[in-house]
Amino acid sequence: MNDLKHKRIALITGANQGIGFQVAKELVADSVTVLVGSRNLANGRTAAEKIGAGAIPLQLDVTDRVSIATAAAYIRQEFGRLDLLINNAAISNIRKTQLGLSLQETIEEGRASKVSLDEMRAVWETNVFGTLAVYQAMLPLLWESSDARIVNVSSGVGSLTNMSDPSSIYHKGYGVVYPGSKTAQNAITLAMMIELEESNIKINLVSPGFTKTNLNGYEGIESLEDGSREVVRVALLGPDGPTGTFTRWPNQVIPW
Image (cartoon, rainbow, N blue to C red):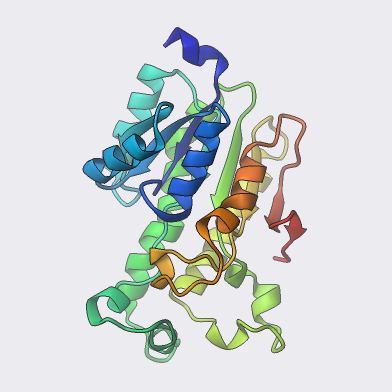
C-alpha cells in the first residue's frame, strides 16, 4: 500500500452502474484510486474489472448500518484515510420497476394526495438517510486527509426555487418521492456545509442533469459521459477549490 500514500483515495457509492460507474472510470483515468461501492459485491467486482487497475470493489449498502461500518473499517485498515467521498447512490422509485410504469405514470403515482408512504420511505431511506449515514461513518476518515472533499450527487429537481417557478419545465413533475428526496438531500448537505465551513474539508452539491440511466428507465436525454462531467470536475478540484457550491455543468449555479 506504500504506492497509495501519494494517490488520492476515493469512495463512490452506487458505483457499479450509471453515473457512479462513469465517474469511477474517469477518476481512475486521472490516477485516483477508487473504491467502487456496490450494494451487491459481485456487481461491484464486475464493474471494477471493467474499469481496470485502480478500481477496487467494496460492498456497501447505504441503507445497512453494518455494511457502512464494515466498509469504513476496511478503508481505515487498508488506507488509513479517505480523500474523496462521492455520495452517488440513489433510487427513484420502487413501484415503477414492479409495475412497469412509464416516467410520467411514476410522476402521477408520486402526487402528494395519493403517494404510497412505503414507496416514499424506501426512496428516502437511500437518497436521504443513506447519504447522511455514509457521511457520519466516513467523516473520521476524511479528517485524516490533508485534502478532503465530499461531493453529494443531487438533482436540479430538488431545488425549491426552481420547482416553485411555474415556468420551469419540471414544475408540474415535482412530487414527494424522488424530487422531494433530493430536496431533503440538499437540506442535509447544507447542514453538512455549515458544520464543515470552518474546517479544511470541502463539500459540494452537484446535479448531473437528466441523464439516461436506470434511475429514470433510460428516458433521460444526456449521455453518461455528459451527465458525469460536473461530478468529475468538482471531484478533481484541488485544495484551493471552492466549497459550499450547488452546480450543474459547466459550473452553473443552481439556486437552493
